[in-house]
Image (cartoon, rainbow, N blue to C red; front, side, top):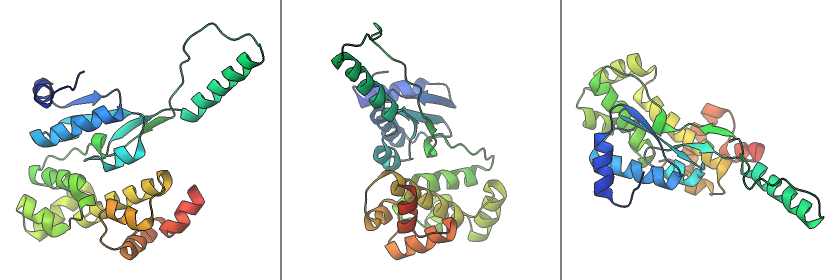
Length: 224
């Protein structure tokens, strides 16, 4: 698939059968697809589930929605390359093969493939809005404005369809991003709070500890 022009990509995406899944060769290519889908108002992942390759964590987490990606075994590849170099430097016979297949570590699932089947169109729209904007600092009032339901109706129907309240889903998506950024980046807590949609770092810490049982700082020390 070539992505040399947005208009040609839009045409190509519009012709795909829906719903469908798309595996892109690289995360950066998948991000272009996600940006184009937003411009087209093409729902991801409901109509097009998108997956990249490389698991570039910052790029994946900052994409809208966050990008599912195949995680390569970079450490294993580096070890194999070092072993091959050592063999060559010491005159040991090496395989004549010019390529080595490395099994990936697995798939890191994020929102771009996280499909929740919901028949209620208004609630499906609410879920999609939350997935797309939870880390932009939205609240339940913003969701109500988007779907034009009363708060009582939204809360009851959302709970029935998704098993949690809109507020809980927003909180879950935000703390999921905090968790990934703590594990996979060196961003400060203030920077992580901004990336996850929290106005105040202190409030982020309270919400994170309530869910995971430890503060963000301690979680980072325990997992990195």
